[in-house]
Length: 268
Image 1: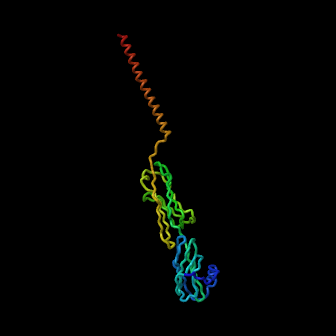
Image 2 (image 1 turned 45 degrees about the vertical axis):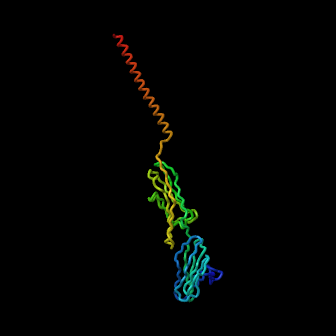
């Protein structure tokens, strides 16, 4: 299907918009409609867009856009275009002229990047009971951030939910972090991350992605080596001290008995 030639010639979109806003005309009232009313697509995607009017016999009508467009089908009061090669957010406009009046309808086109890669990291992977650890989930190349929610899970228990309302869309992706204190039961559960990109308010679907589960190895803390040495030395010294006291007592008793035996012989 050949490309439709714009009635505004080589001047394109700026001339079309200027003509429609500055030269409204004085004809009958009519409406211009677009379908879909909201549009989200993946990079490089394409979409059919319908432009229609309530005017029974429009003079001209069409779609103004910087994107690649092809006239797919048309009727007396409507035109359907295939818009393709969409790689960035843009705005497209449907226009119709009826009895000297011109009207315009606009549609915002948003490019989205669904969560595909989930990077889950636990630091440290070995931790003693009572010590701190960190769970971090990173999702690169996801957009729009304001539609994203990241949830960190321990088993089925939610550790944290993070939304990104108001954050700037860029190529850095999104990150959620949870810091906790290790308990014995932490070693019996998987840790995971769940991403939810909700585009329903923009006319799109809801996308889900889950990371590969990871385990945290938890162990009982062992005494410090230096403390073990100190306790061992003190124990040995205490043993020697008690042993020397006992030896002194035994030797004293033995010496006393010998003296008592000598006195008994003299008396006899």
